Image (tube, rainbow, N blue to C red):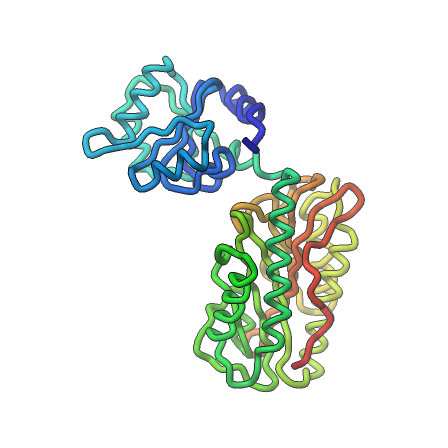
Length: 356
C-alpha cells in the first residue's frame, strides 16, 4: 500500500468520526489504487471497497489489502453500508460533502438512521497535496511524454491543417509514447481563437500569421501532465513578438522566485506585475497556476487569493497569459516541483518564440 494510513487515522481523529465513506474517484484511487466505481468504507481497523459486478474482479486485483463487497439487485450501497456500520458499531460517519450529491446523501441519512454525519471538507483532498516520491516519478514521466508530443507536432503543423487535426496528432503521439489518455481536453487555438484561454479545437485551418496556442497533457499510471506552448505560423509581427516576450518574461520571473515558504499569491504577483506594467494587466484574467496530481486542477493555487504557503514536493503549473480579443493570445506553461530553495522544472520544451 502506497498511501500513509496514519494520515487517514489523523483525519478521523481530527473530525471526530469512527468511519469514513470515500466517494471521490481520485481519493479512492489514492487510498486504495482501485480505479473503478463505487465507494470506500474505512475505519481505523477496516478497509472495504463497495462496488458492482463490473468491477469486483478488478477491485480484488488492484486493492489486495481491501475487503470487496458487491452490490446486487436486492442489496444496494445503502444496505451494505448499514450492514458494515452495524457490524463495526459505528455512530459517527465522515463523508465527502464537496463531492457527494444531495440525492445520495438523502438516501444515506434516511436508510441508515441514527448516525451522526460529519462533513469532511478538504480533509481527504489535503492528503494528496504534498506528493510522495513515487508520485513525483509518474508526474515527471507524464510531462516528459508531453515534451515528446510538442517536439513531434512542430514537425507536423503546416498552414491549412485544422485545429482538430493538430489536437488529434498531439493526443496520438502521447498515447504512442506510453500515455493511457489525456489529462484534460486538448486545447488548440489559432488566430483570434487563441484569445480564448480555454478555446475548443474547431475545423478552423491555421493560416500564415496565426498564433497557435497548444495546451495539452496526458495521464501516466493515473498521474497528469500539463503544458502550454504558443507558436507563430510564418513570421511573427512586431505586436506578436511584444506580447510573447512579455508573457515569457513574466513566466521566467515567477519561476525565478518560486520556492517553498512563499504563498501562492506572492508568486502570482510577480508575474502579474510584469504583465500589468507592460499595459496588459486587464488581459490576464486567470490565476498563474495550480497543482496537478491524479486530477488536473488541484490545490494549492498560484492566484491572487492563493494564501496557502508552498511546501517541498508540491506540484505547481506556472502559466501566465495575455489574451487580446480579435487579435490573439499567448500562454506559456511549465509544470514544476516545489523545492526548498526553488523548483525542479519537469517541462523541457523550448520557450523562446518559435516561428514555423
